[in-house]
Length: 305
Image (cartoon, rainbow, N blue to C red; front, side):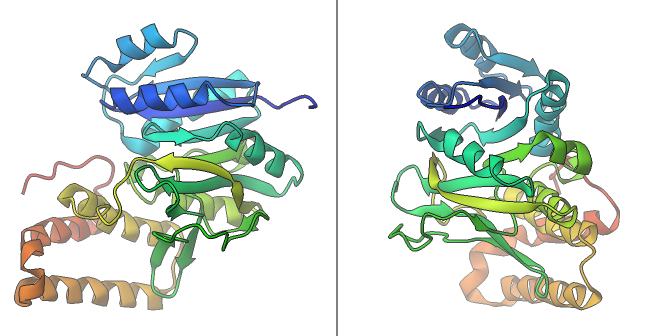
């Protein structure tokens, strides 16, 4: 094996002690040698900092002192990476476990093409280890929609073994080159959580780089199928940040018309259709999300109504 470029693995933690320790344990099995692990602690109060420091004294812990959200929290790690001289940054969710070869396969793929700016692995559900959560993402600019490719599909080899271009890869596991990061800048902290990596990848693609999914690189994510959008908190940020993403991405006027009509239909359905009675309590959250977007209220928001 030739000289390996250094990778800064950035793991954001917020009161996720058990998951973070399991993630770090899986990283101990990597067949890639030249890496540094940075745990950015987002103001945890569950003893995470002390426990991680004791179990993994070689892991660098950066404490933010408060919950900065996904974007700004990861930016702390990315800024450190730029100052440390690492060739790559890998954003990795703390609630994942990884295959030993996953990082080697990502880096080897990116190294062969200077126009590849970002790469991501195949991501499976932890509790359904052969079922896909994401093999990259697609953006429908006409409808203003984004989605995970392969979501909830059993892996039968349908996506092959050849690295393939996608519109974005999820921030659950995202490898980015140093020179790309320097050119396009950090994550947009206005998002706080959700859509920030989609906007980032859009910026990267428009700067002339490719976004690649590497099928042979594999990790497992501790997320439950079908439960991603049930939380009012998730619904707020997904609604508001979808609009922010469309603005940042300069979506055409036709797209805005479609999205606004879609939001109106959703609110009407939740109000009058018995099928959606269980979601009526989220109407206020959705209205607040739309209002906050138009009032330029971004970042972390108080969701008390």
